[in-house]
Amino acid sequence: MKSIDVKELIEVMDELEKERGISKDYLVSALEEALVKAYKQNFDVDENVDNVKVTIDKNTGEMHVYSSREVVDELPVPELEITLEEAQKIDKRYKVGDIVNIEIIPKDFGRIAAQTAKQVVVQKIREIEKEMVFTEFNDKKGEIVSGLVQKADGKIVVMDLGKLEGVMPLKEQIPTETYKVNDKIKGYVLEVEKGLKGTPQVVVSRSHPDFVRKLFEFEIPEIYEGLIEIKSISRDPGSRSKVAVYSKDENIDPVGSCVGQKGVRIQNIINELNGEKIDVIEWSDEPSIYIAAALLPAQVMAVDIKEDEKFAQVIVPDDQLSLAIGKSGQNARLAAKLTNWKIDIKSESQIREILLSQMESENNDTLEQDNVTEEDNLTENKEKTKRTTKKEKKEKEVEENIQEEKTDKKSKTSKDKTKKDEEKEEKTTKRGRKKKTEEN
Image (cartoon, rainbow, N blue to C red; front, side, top):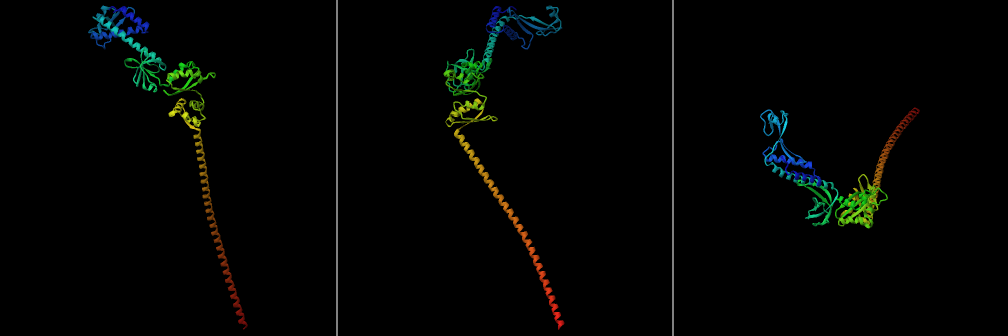
């Protein structure tokens, strides 16, 4: 088959390859596949049959349609096979099992091929452009882009980014800002996704902490060049941000460099954020110093840290308490998020009251302990006295028993003696009577 609009087709492919970077080989391959499908649809060929192929010469544009058939001995399937006899009419070298490519020239296929070629080229151009745009913006993920507001209905803002649209959901908007059509605004590329039909979709944010980070990189050359490092950012979009900066170079003042002469540098960032306050503090690897700095603009008297719990007890002057905590706890909350430490803030008076209360409690505990000790001593003395009384009583009973026994023994001895005396006296009397009788 002769080429279909050969010159025009080749010129279009060459132009696309040069201007848009679309590979000519890719277009030729896509066109060949599309023509095979068009042939099957228009000439009643089973779409599951894989023996039809189209070839296009990428230099001349010449196109051929072939039907690949297997050589068999007899009874061939017309669409898939060819007899050995018919095959050898084409080339005597064919044998059973070989594949013969037979060129077919369907009627009106030239017109169908021309329409298909146009559709394929247009479709592939769109697909490739979408892919190229997706790749371009995917490379911009984490960067800042500028665009015009196309739509702003309060819930979603649509931005014209040139080659495609950017979408800014409600949660990615700054609550204090109002967006109007044709406003030129900047946004942080949060996500790049493929939407319906492969169309790239860019999700843009103005409330993300990294939006502030990128603004700092744009405005402060030392950060862009890596001389100053942003260690951490905490943000309450539209109200206040805290940025911790650090420099290895001792000759560079990281905070001063970010603020700029008379605050010019930081003011440009504040203007872009429509007046959002920004506290720039110097990062330190010493937690107590870092936490004290994070509570700026409040002045801190002392910081007591518990490393294992990542907990910090902060003491501030009485007149600095409300400033340290901030409206609705904002300053303390942002400081805690910035440092990644739990922070408890107390005024000097509150600490005094706590200490006095602890001292009173300790004194009461000591007094109570003394009372308990005294009671224990009294109880012990009573028990001791009781034990002594019992012992004395027992000893007294024993003594009385001994005395009683002695008395009984003495009494018995006395009785025995008296009885003996009486017996002796009686014997003496009897002797006297006897003697008197004898004398008479």
